[in-house]
Image (tube, rainbow, N blue to C red; front, side, top):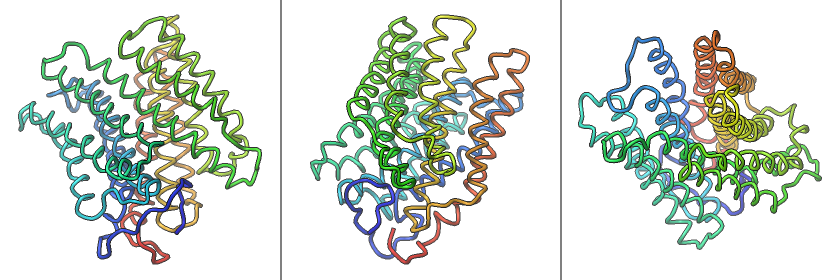
Length: 401
């Protein structure tokens, strides 16, 4: 069986008779994530315009922050890990009815945030907090059963994300005071750390396999140094938010991230959309971290620019790029997306540039939010239009999955 993720091991075939959309984790979760991403930014822009007020549980800013991380990004992470872990371990994670239940649990959390006037705030928290532990069980059982120690940390990252989500909810419920900002930033750090962890394994390998340039490689010592530094940034944001130590750690992590990617062959990827979007995603990490370091030293660099370099730039590009690639490879299709997907990558990159640059010019700040939001939305609408038929129909080669 082919291994489009390029990771060790083979996934077991799903049970026969399972509908295509429930055959593998990437299918429902990538479609849910992309549709949610295409909807959530218009709602946010309507909130900015004063037309809607999605702030009955969290205020609008933290509602936006929460749903982009714990709604959108977590759905992509779920789809990727449910698929990849079965490759890594040779054991299934969740398919069929269990996968449908997982999707329903995620969706219940999103609906809960949309209905805080109808249900109690405590129920909002319970419904939203149910998903990540369920995901941890789904990926953790095969990982631990197979003694796949290399991937134990991934289960830890999923549960750390749950703890960050718990802190946001405890703040909203009045149990913890002033924790939502800290927990939201730590959640972004965790997603960036996970991207760095996975990028080291697959970005240079994808590029080497596609370009046949054998000098492309990763340097494990630099990979571990960069990830260790990012973990230190995370701990600083948790324990000493806004400190000079944190700024120095951001700068050091940025340098290490750039150094480790120097041998990844980014310049060989420029003609291949499925590659350059991944290299662009990784480049946004040092950009965002440098901006974070500078924002603590000078008022010239707005903190929101640093944050959105990491969220729209790094997380947005990495997730859209991986959804596009996995959505083709794991449905038995050639890794050649339609041109509209290459356009979507460009739109998302422009969205990141506009969102990062906008706060530097106060007169353009508000318009830049609408422009960036519209570009983001268009990119994910394009994904849904192209990939909905791919994700919801059987593989053309007749193989299971």
